[in-house]
Image 1 (cartoon, rainbow, N blue to C red):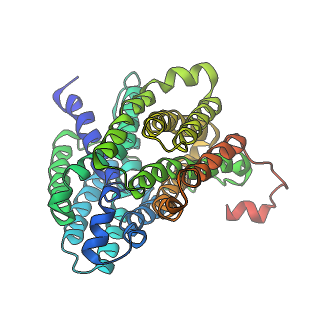
Image 2: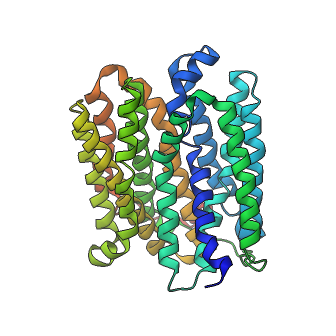
Image 3: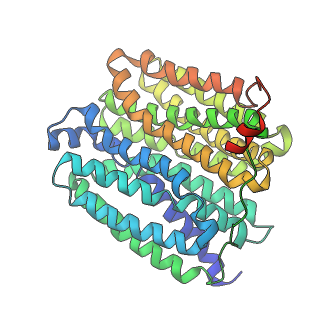
Length: 383
């Protein structure tokens, strides 16, 4: 392994943490944003949701750009554009401008994860490829607690200062990637039309619907405990308690070989739901258990869903299917802060029960939805 290959994964993981962390960075700052802009906490939570909705939509709009223009070019462009958008967030002079800048930040950031995952699969040797994908998946998951922890620790600096730091880090990481990525690390041109998904839709729709619930539950918990005005020290404890269980994502390959992708996803969904039910008790010990079990469940569910999707989607439609999955995953994450602030005034049970019920419902549909009718040829053409 040469120096470039040795440095590639650490830089990619740092970039993944930075990009995905922007979805969560405003969660600990909702109260500060509400006070600064003189808006309600519910409206202030849109600082996270505006990023998230644009980020989710970007998977559908930009997810396949690297198929046509190369992984390296799109990753570097995404990081540089995110740096500029972060400066725009920092320079926002009113709340509406802040929301627009955050949405722009989410849109340009969305081009990075699909290109990074594809690049790891193409650049690393077959022996190191599963490990590389696991490390990158862990970085995507670990962004949630780490971004919240660091944002809370730096809250006194204010959002503009944090965003300028994000801009600087984006430039540094894009420079690092430009140095370690070989010029020939380009994806082949993808000119072929994707195969219709109509014949697969009943099986794939179950995965897409399940994806909507996973980060919805995860972010609802973290945004909810923030909205319940728990002491900052306890909030930081809850965030850090959820970090070690995310390492389970590195061990899912072995579990999938034993019980399969669907069973692995279901195990994660049930584990996460049990964690939320423990949190419904409302005392701090139950919330710590909830944080641990919820993170463990997400760490199992997401690789299980990706494995299920990869095995069921035909190669010509796999990128398209993965884009829809990513859209559903982060659409759920974007809805969560709004749901959390609406449910929190009703107490712990009202906060934890809906996402737990969604996860348990997902266990019933993850293996596929019933195909009520055979699609016509015209329907197949549309899909």
